[in-house]
Image 1 (cartoon, rainbow, N blue to C red):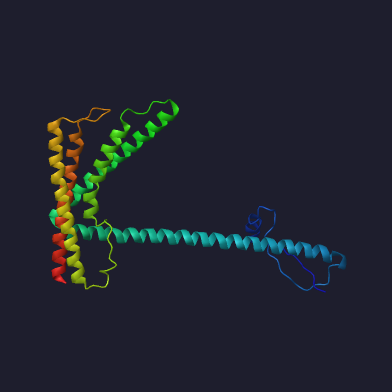
Image 2: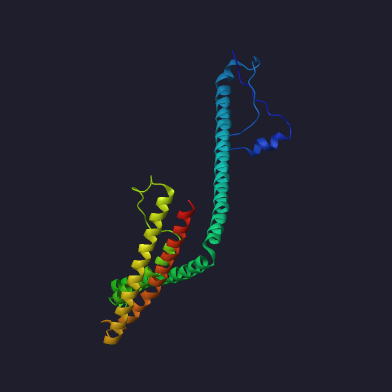
Length: 261
């Protein structure tokens, strides 16, 4: 018959074994299984019970250690991937800035500043709408003219973000029919699309300016706030002019790239 003998050594590892106690009060100690006949048969059941507890404690501690190692490995992998993405993204941005040249860099900075201004205006409109809704529900007193401010502000903010979207190539494109075309032909088609976009933006800027002049002559104002309507129309013109300039710049760059291929 085989019995279990538990041996605790008086070595420096004893402190480590005592510190490895789990939250359930299981002791992690050095143990060994050896055939012995010194124990009486009456202690067979208690010895097996003690060995089972010890085995469960060691297994539970090993699982916790493995899970901790896997979690640490996952965190290190995520950190390494994030660092690699930043390191690869920054040279790409620098390379784009170099490829744009002086005119492209100027257009990009103007488009970025206009987009930031449009974003701040959009945030202000959202906060105003939130205050108006809460005031209408709580005290039955919304912000006067909130609908008019929302309409004017949203149009100005949306138009302000179009030049930056054009400079960064953020417009949606459907390349289902052009995916298998030669690179040079694809470049020519991209150049033509940028050129058409620039012409449409210039047309919108022209007609918007004409409408703003007509509204200023007529003296039309908003119904609730009595604001001059032509101001909101005139605020759209710079965004579409810059949008047209960005489209012309991208068209010229795509034409040059297509000729090199």
